[in-house]
Length: 200
Image 1: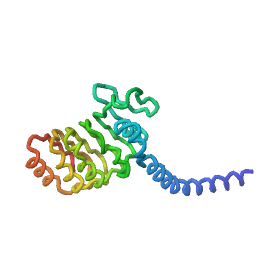
Image 2: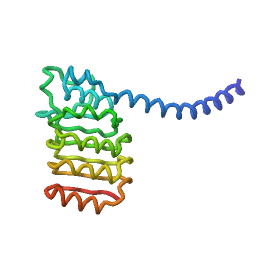
Image 3: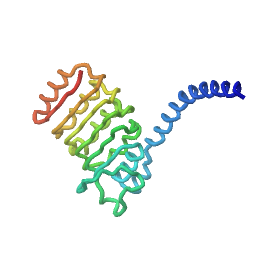
Image 4: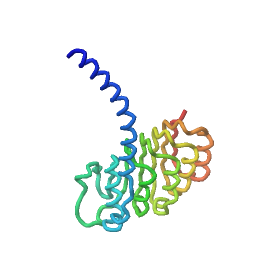
């Protein structure tokens, strides 16, 4: 019996190693599912509601115009007229949002603040896609990007398209290679911008 117990423990250990590798693929697959854009849903409920569902499904939070409270529970999204709740701020800390889901942002017209913190799937192409959205170019005032390891100088320079940006905070971004060049470029292009860099 003791021998069986030792063998089962060893098998369990091997199975655990195998599972950990398989589980990574499982979570990547699941996150891709969470980010898949449902264009019919956007059409049926409007961009703000559909984007809210996407963001909360992926672990992010949203705050609506006229409200202090952050929405973080998918099951407690507000009900009522579909055009009543307009996303003003997005906090994507520890979320699994990724590039394929960013089409949910296309119709958002009132987003003033976005925070990406510890977003493992955020890459340069995400920031480039965001920076091309005309609605966000007009509305976005504040952005924070913290501990997103796949962001490089290329992605940060795309943010220059946000002509009304008033505050930019960049921290713990190992992919950034030339912070002085970034700081000078933003000061030249957006002289009223308050930029804070906490980069090595």
